[in-house]
Length: 179
Length: 178
Image (tube, rainbow over all chains, first blue to last red; front, side, top):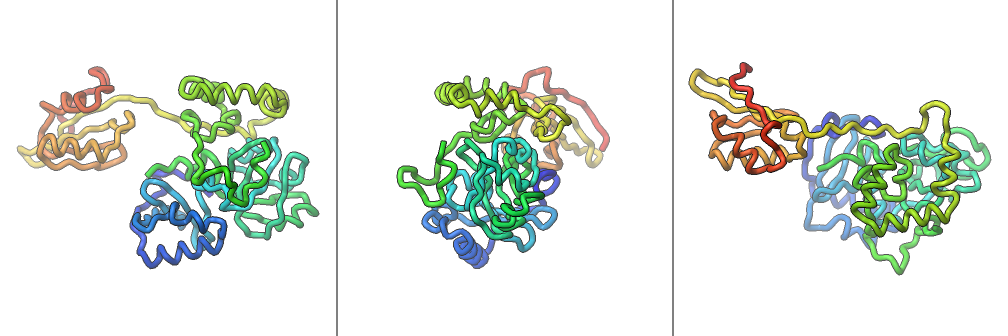
């Protein structure tokens, strides 16, 4: 989504978010990611207003102060940004890929099934269309955020093609956005 | 490093938000530096800025055959696939100053090229506005327009404020037509 994203070209404006919308968003996030609940006040303090950064292709980024925390496209679910995920790794369930896949993911490739089923990887049960963090063999931190394109059982049985779509990865356009 | 598998439940011995250090060269978490095309640069940066971390990382790659050593051998040779493109960084270039005629006897001063020095244009424009007691605005990608003819003083002001801009990096283009 952010492979060709450029801050200068694609950002069209930043506006504060209405408090009612903020509240709705917060509830939705807690509903989606229950693990985040104890920390939600740290991540989105009540005092500081949320800002929404509108970008082309109906992408919206949500920021607190100078830090981006969530983003979404059209009516998609809210995805946490990688920096936020690094701080609070328990937000998302974690799929782990083998070592060979890392460099492809870091250049923006989607995650293919074999990368998730090979010995170095761990595949945890997850539904189709759920949001997951992509970890890597031998690494401590997430390197991408993705959406399951198949359910975990399908990945196991079919073992071919795209298993997880890469939404946001280290060093992509969003990673480099500075507010 | 088993910590990657199970952290769905917040761990008790870690306080959140977790702090982690990002590499100054490739901006990724340190452990991913080895996948960056400019790994050598990352190493240098790390050695210079965080010697402790550097030592730990080096020891790790020696102990663990899957990290580092063997990776080099296994490197895919064919095609250029899977390589991360490095973003071009343009280093500091030149600041240019121009005067433009606005209305017979009135002028504006145009300063270009400040952002190549990693200067925040908004802050710069505010500084100019305060300094010259006049209007100043960011008008483009890398352009600040100061109302009034301030060419007599602007070079000194720029150099006072940002000492890294040297004499030869700043150029007065004189009168320009818009």
